[in-house]
Length: 237
Image (cartoon, rainbow, N blue to C red; front, side):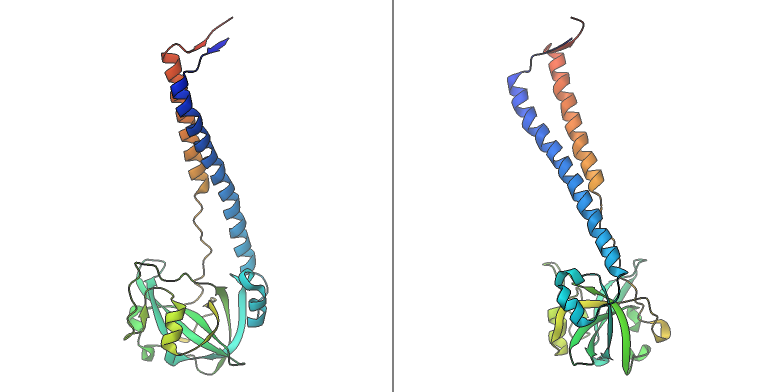
């Protein structure tokens, strides 16, 4: 037999806190399923048949992470560099080069990364002539409030600020996106493409367990307090 006579003050404090903690736990479970679905969509998009520019524009937001097949010429004199790090943490530049398509429209193409020592175009083989290229359609994040101003003299940016880069290049982009080069090697080995990664943080299960654990701990404290004060007893009838 359980005899429970809850005290008013701790109960008024406990109930809303317990509901809040449990609600946060279930919200993280919902976020977990949303994140898993989003990752699955991205993975499926990257292995779908390649799109043309018109096909991507027709899809709108659904073109995100789709493979593109484009034919055009790189405007090598308009290279821009975006400072970042490689998978090992070493400083590198991503080489962003406008790609003028056969119909005259221009897209920004991220050809991959190079060591900072290869910023001088004379140290690399420039892709001359017309090319058939493949890459992933991405809408890049803009600069944040703490992003340093670009070094226009050396054409170095610290975020993929398309508006600023296109203005410096005196080009009008057909879409505010970047096409990230696939793994096809470039002559001489640089830039190194194939850097698109679907690596979204997915810690929602840990967060859910944390909230549920806090709710369980709060319940334990609440019950222990009532046991100590003789308001919760277990025994036979």
